[in-house]
Image 1 (tube, rainbow, N blue to C red):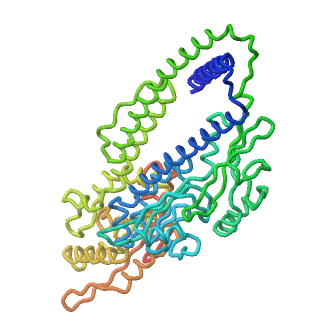
Image 2 (spheres, rainbow, N blue to C red):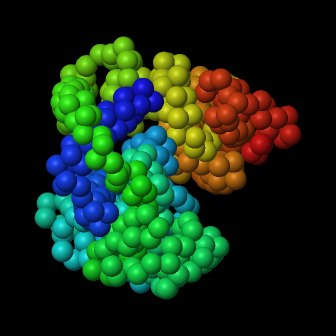
Amino acid sequence: MKKIVFIAAVLLGIIATSSAIIFNYLDEQETVKTVAKKLFIQRKSEVETLINEKEKFLKSFAKYLSSSKPVIEGYLENNRTKIINFVYPLYKELYPEFIEEIHYFKSPAIDFVNFANLKHFGGDVSKVRSDILWVNSSFKPSVHFYVCRMYPGLRATYPVIYKGKMLGSVSFGTNITFIAEILKNMNAKEVTIYLNDKILKNFLSPKAYKKYMKYPLYEHFRVLGKIKKIDLNKPYTIKNSVLYSVIKLNDLFGNTFGYLIILDNLKNCHILFDKQTKHLIYVGIFATILGIFIMIIIFNHFNKAFIENNKIIDLIKNKKFEKLPQKTEIKDIVDEYKNKLIDLGKEIELYINILTQKIEKYYTKAYTDGLTKTFNRTFLQEKAQELYFKYKLAQINVGFIMIDIDDFKKINDTYGHDVGDLVLIQLANNIKKNIRKDDLLIRYGGEEFVIILPYSDIQTTYQIAEKIRKSIEISYLKISDKEIKFTISLGISEFRYDKDNDLFNAVKRADINLYKAKRNGKNRVEI
């Protein structure tokens, strides 16, 4: 990258120098004001291009997040977990370099899934998110500057629609500072952001607004950087050979969101030559032609790379992962960026394959216990690594419950194995009534069962275990005129995604706690 920037800078220097010599010889040298005007137009065009390209990316990604099958199903089933399982790995991959947060709303503006705070949902945000109300009423997507509760920035808001019905919307974005960071890499001397303090105060949370209060105030605008005392209503100002380009930014409703102030040193753009340099005219002409020729070569190189990278992005967007090209040898930043796109595509493919597969596919003969119709031990042994990777990747709480029927041998000896089988069936059916659809119930062996509870911390796991224990304690199995009662002992544990090497570490801890329950009197839950 440094090599390319150096060559480009040298070529630009040659062209600028040569042009200055030629213009000096022809007595057509531009004034500082003319140069400043052209530079302002250039900077304005650069900002518009940056915003347009960012808008395309945000809108495309928003469309994918709003129309994917797991998202639609999550809304229709009122199942937040399904949306979290699908989106969370993508969110972790893109945060914070590409996006700040992802937020799903139910129509018209009810907080549904906020990946910045998964525990917070159900609140009405219509008073602070007028853009959500607009999208839900218009059925149209939008990419716009907006101040949400967390930060000011460029946001994409896209409706979630199923069969013509508005289910809600998804909204996410990137912080306004992304523009300044890019412009600084484009030889701008300095970039300062002015943000409308009234909008910040009205829409940011008190905690978030407190962070912005540390920035100085200038004409009702918070200044992210040093204050430049210039007229914000003028497109540009010249002071001491420095150009101050003023780029106004409006929000979705036409309000002044803020300004970008871009500083450029005009001394680097306007060089005076004495007329005695006429003899350098031929050198200038030659250098200009050479520089243009080399710039055309560089442009063609980058243009070709741009087309290739766009094709890769389209393949990823259309989920045609099998057509992704092989990574190339890194010669410059273009090759490095191409390889990163290919890696990102393969990672997204992996996430989609893991997170969108349905549990129903496991209900095959090989993985189902014939008696209780639960998963069997073969299922756990063969799928343990896959589940381990899924839970570790998502970094979620997962609870484990190990269950054993108390004195089961006595039941078999007293009533026979047929009755023992009925006891096992009743236990399995009772457990199914007390767990969620996405929880996994596995007959681990004999009268032992394992329950895996995604998104369940140790306290919640204990409550579920205790609920199952009590329901068994008060139930009975009626055989002819006999009422057969039985109890169970339970041990629980929690998956440690930062320490466990596999899923069976958590199973073993639950098993140890099960035998602790047996030793302490049975018919109890032990942690």
